[in-house]
Image (cartoon, rainbow, N blue to C red; front, top):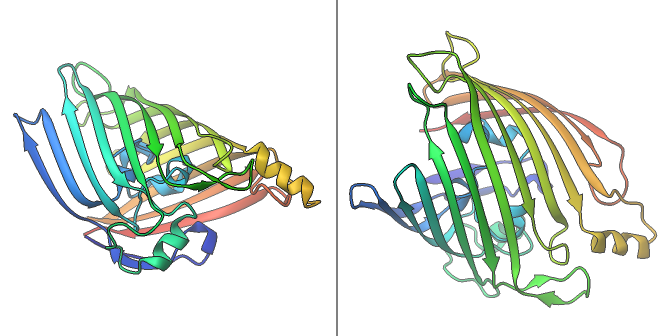
Length: 307
């Protein structure tokens, strides 16, 4: 898979034309073991930050940046990785992954040093290991859909230490997420209905400017009978900023925010097979750590073509 990304706001991500995925997948033992290796975007392999699990609509809801701070790969930047997913009875699974870390300075630096995304081990990048376990059950005639997952990431790369000013390894992330279907609206298509979910994440404040993230979400899959692929969502989030980054702002005589709180509403239209349009409106109190800028109200739009 190849990807082309054009963003007018540099902080939102790099402009890039890259290989989005070059990988091999193998299922063994009647689907109880899944193996995948190659250049992979692990943001859709782990955690599950996309609302409703849909790539077409997930980016317009508020979602945590902490996994990417810690080094997890995401489109359009992929890295060499190997993942194993072990399925147990009663819908329980365990996923284990080993991935070359993203650049600690973020996606813009990653894309600038690797223009097509095929460098295997750039200097300075360590190894990110990912462990996730969960329970996942699709909607059927007896049960509503449910997905409970938690995990741990550990990175050996040298990250800037916001407390000492030097560098340190052992960056990590702990996360817990849950999504539950509350109400089914169609007996023929059980996935339709109302859902609710939450997210909680924690990363070391010494190495990460965004150290804690909490999210509550409510979303409706197929809110109208004639539009089975649409989705509406309301998402609220709270992000805690690192105190060490705030200390640096005080030392530089700058104002700062302690945290950010956001509320976002969006609707995803499926125009045709693989063609989606998502408008949304988002309010954020504390949009950046420093300076202490005014709260923001933003109109969001996304147009996606998948083929």
